[in-house]
Image 1 (cartoon, helix red, strand yellow):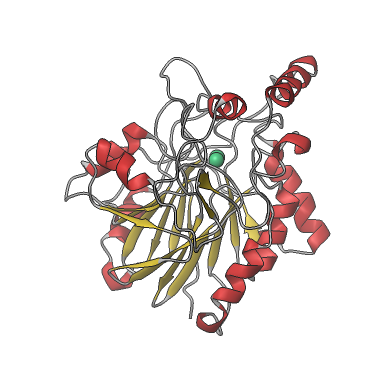
Image 2: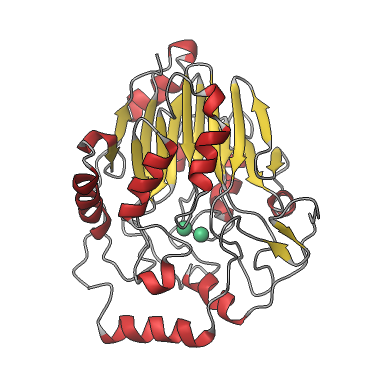
Amino acid sequence: MLVALVATATACSSVNLNFDASRPHHRPNGFQNNYLDFEPKGALELLRWRFDAWRHSLPPPTQQPAPSVAPDVAFVQANARAGAAMQPAVTFIGHASVLVQAGGLNMLTDPMFSERASPFSFIGPKRAQPPGLSLAQLPRIDLVLISHNHYDHLDEASVKALNAQPGGPPLFIVPLGLKAWLAEQGITQVMELDWWQSHRAGAAEVVLTPAQHWSGRGLHDRLATLWGGFAVFLPDYQWFYSGDTGYSKDFADIRARFADRQTDGGFDLALIPVGAYEPRWFMATQHVNPAEAVQIHRDLGAKRALGVHWGTFSLTDEPLDQAPRDLADARRLAGLPDDQFFVMAVGETRRLPPRR
Ligand code: ZN
Ligand code: ZN
C-alpha cells in the first residue's frame, strides 16, 4: 500500500473507461466517493508522514502480529460439502481475507496469500504470519469478492491460484474496471458491478455497495477502477463486507437501501476494517479507526461484526496489535458486548447462529 500511496503523491489519474455521466460517482477522469472527493495527498504530506514515523520510530519495533491458531481444516472441509446442512461459519485467513461459509456456498473476500502486499517480490509490506488457511487447505471456493485493486486486497498470485483450483474456477465478483485486469491474468469467470448493481450466483444475491476509498496499483491508474463493499443475501443468511473505507454516510444509506429485505433484522455478520488508521491526519479519509468501525456497525444495524484489515501487514503507524485494544475501548464506550464486534486469531473458525 505504501507503494500505492507513493504513487498517489506523484501520479496523474487516467481515463475512466466506464464513464456514465448519469451517475455522480462517475467522473470523466476516474471514479469518486459519494460524500468526500478523494484528494491525493501531496508529496510534502507523504514526506511529513514518513518523516514523523521515522522520528518517532513508528510503528514500534516491539509490535506483535495477530495471534495464530492451527486451523480446523476438518470442520471447514466437511462444512464446505454439507450443502443445505452447512453451518454459518467464518474463518479468519488474515488481513482482509476471510472465508465465509453460509447457505451452501464457500465465499472468500480479498484473497491475499502472498508474502508481500506489493508489486515487487523483494520490497513492500511483508506478512507477519502465514495465512490462516493455505491455498491447499481451502475448500473449493464458489465466490471470490474483491473490494478494490490495492495490493493488500487484489493479489495476482492468489487470484491465479484460485482460478486454477481443482473443480473449476470460482466466480469473481469485482467493482467496475477490474474485469479487464483479471482477463489479462487469464481469469474470465468474472462479474463486474457498479455501486448498487447486483448479481445472482446460485442461492446468493450479491450487491456492490459504496465505500469511501480510492483505487490504484501503479503510476497512471489512480481512481480508474471502482472500489466498494458487498452485501450478500442468502435465503437463510445475510452478510456484509465494507471493503476499505473511511467513515461516511454510505453505511446509513446501505441500511436504508436494504431495509425492506431486513425487516427481520440487519446483517447477520458484517466484516469491517479496524486496522491501518494512524496517523489520523493522513488516514482518516480512507481508513476508519476502531471507534468509527463500531459506528459503521451501528449505522448498518448488523447483528455482529468481525474486525478485519489488521495484524498481518504493517501499513501504517499504529502497532499491529493496537487495533484489538482500541476496538475494546470503542466497544466499552458504545456499550457493546464483546461478541457483537469481535476479532479472531489468524486460522480461527467461528460457527455463527443461523438467521432464524
Ligand atoms: Zn485500499
Ligand atoms: Zn487495505
